[in-house]
Length: 115
Length: 109
Image 1 (cartoon, rainbow over the protein chains, first blue to last red):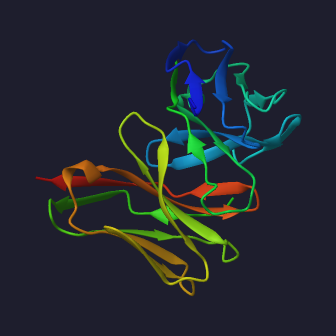
Image 2: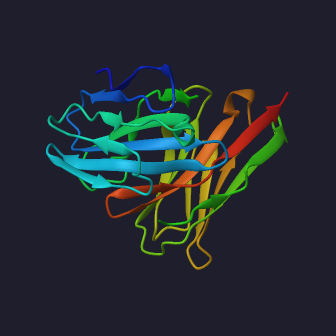
Image 3: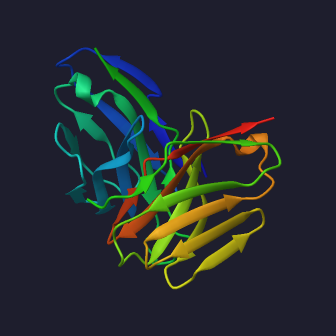
């Protein structure tokens, strides 16, 4: 299994540009999550999905959109990039069985800079 | 959202013990977790503790939970340079995980 993969690894955007961060998992996990990580701030949940066709907002959803058309893929869309969206973005997935060891598996991250 | 707090930095000498502390707010959390993040990588699960336990030991790792004070700690015995990383505690509420701010552990040779 490749686990959770994210592309691209790095990206620089100009203010107002749009882009899609890709996330895919091959573990047949029901749940998928998008986080952003800012220095000294820990991880903040942007959006999550409990299955194909279902998405929910997390703590910091403004400026982002997601879709979940398949179990494997959970892309994150930035429509009008702003400097405040400069961050490292992590995608994660999790199996839904109620066991504590069914924790989140994280991708390697996408480092985004908006200038 | 829930508040999960940690001190930002910790330095220890190689061979000493490290203790990383965490406070959380949701007393209904069933599990609490510790994750490790190495430079340039995502988070990896280190260990977890069920909320009705006080302590859990896993090789060099000891997790202590004080549910009354909502305080969680991670002790790493015989800390090695390979333990240098950022450590996050996390609690789960419903379908969402809430992560602490992370503690950057530096191990001095």
